[in-house]
Every structure is written in structure tokens, then in C-alpha cells.
Image (cartoon, rainbow, N blue to C red; front, side, top):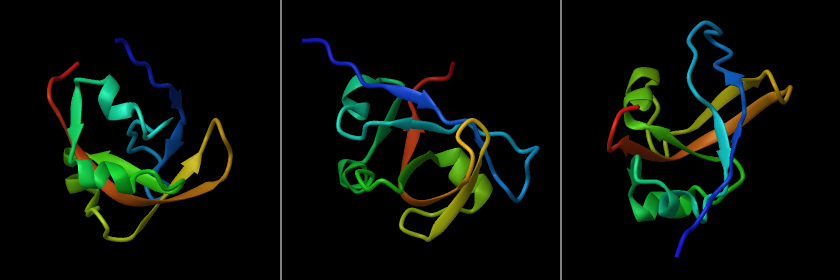
Length: 99
């Protein structure tokens, strides 16, 4: 059986440092980790990601930004979708390969 999940480039920036780019992608939490082999997240954390404001962030980005799972709120300034988007770090993932 083959599965798919959508990824929508969100194009947001950290409002505290607009020059510090990192990828922001909206996706469906139900199928995401079943469809990719390039990253993994703990199942308990993936479940928490199902909230509309839930975010799973890469472990290296979380370390760089000082974000911790369950540790509060972050913000992303929209570029493609204008607005100030609040999110909660609900999980972190580790890349299993580099691109």
C-alpha cells in the first residue's frame, strides 16, 4: 500500500530575526510520519501535534532557538500567508538522512 501526505510551504519567518531563515511547512499530522523516512518523531509527541497550533520542529532548530517540547509558545511571521502565527512545540524530530 502507498500513502501520501500533503506539505504546504508556509513561508514564515522568525519575527525576532527575519534573516534567520528556517523551513515552515503545514501538513496533516495523521499521515505525515507514516509517509516519510527522512525524519522520525516519538509517537507520544506526534499525537500532541494534532492540535492546530501544534508544531513538530527539528531537534537542531529547537536547540538553536531554545525551544523545548511542551515549553511554551513560538511565533512565525507570515510571508505567503500574512499574519502572526502562534504555535506550541509539541514534538521534535530527528532527521534520518540529509538532503
